[in-house]
Length: 425
Image 1: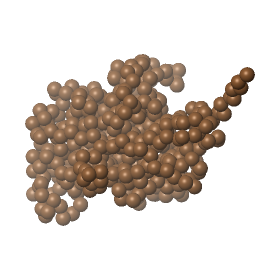
Image 2 (image 1 turned 180 degrees about the horizontal axis):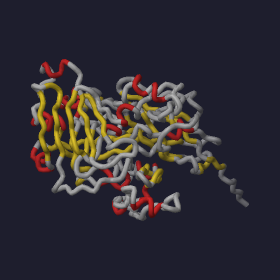
Image 3 (image 1 turned 120 degrees about the vertical axis):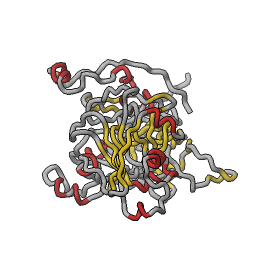
Image 4 (image 1 turned 90 degrees about the vertical axis):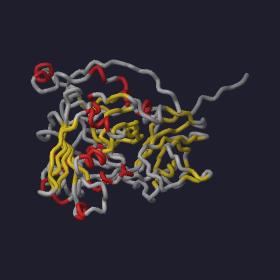
């Protein structure tokens, strides 16, 4: 692994595209953004308000655990400025008259419960949206492949917090005979709704192996504002839209969240859906949950120039969802006629000799590398990942109106130069 290059860079806000930005910002809720926490030189800023920035790919893979200053930033509104000492959230159970209660929780209550730490990859459902926009227009921030990051998250299990509020711990309890959901609502404003909210199935949360956390720390330090201070949801293996930040309320209920971000966003709509008719399709299709198999090439960049006939080390990341492990990444240099295996760098603790125990759940990404012994002219490099359930990436991107879950074979076409010949006299 390469060590992190210490690049502080500028933390001043990027220039606005609007000449009236100063007056509009002062009245739009964005006047108290945490610019001092943002090392802008590490990012490609896609939007200033709300602040959305993806990691530069060469820096993204410098470390297996992504430093906080390199982790992508995804927001739907102004960043709340919350006093951790005064912060509280409510836990509400509202499933039936016999199972109904409300409890207020503060940071000290979370810290009294058993603490866990996991390394888990967070990926935005819109990662690689640019590949779908290349087919035809999509709705959303146009991200490249830099909205995936792998961090250490610490906090209590959400399961334990719900049990302390009266939710049955045993999944065989009659309470679980019907589907139920856990909704998370955030402090602060959101662009498309009154506030940000989302939900995941209660059964998933209550399985202790799924390690859904109410996290208060990231990479060994308290959360920063962009990443949800003072407390956020960490839902390993599930899309980032369900990892709700700045927690205000956790609610156990009989139905999924009615929020915009659950009902009218983060769904894969069929190809005939578009801006003029999408309202008829939103109710018909499920909200996205588990991540799909994914990989990307981080080096070389498309603008990089490779020397024909020379060696080159291709590097990237791969991930999957639902606890499924990435078992291999393959690289092609000839348009998919032939594929070769890469070297992997991953976390896995259970081993029998050199054989990995594939029953172990996997929440983090893997980094990979592949050495091209002799760069061919006009080189196109492609990669695809496979996971422990036999899933792999499709050859071609599947367009959808919201531009989500693009996991097609990743390709990069760097420039190639033929080295000049030297003549001896």
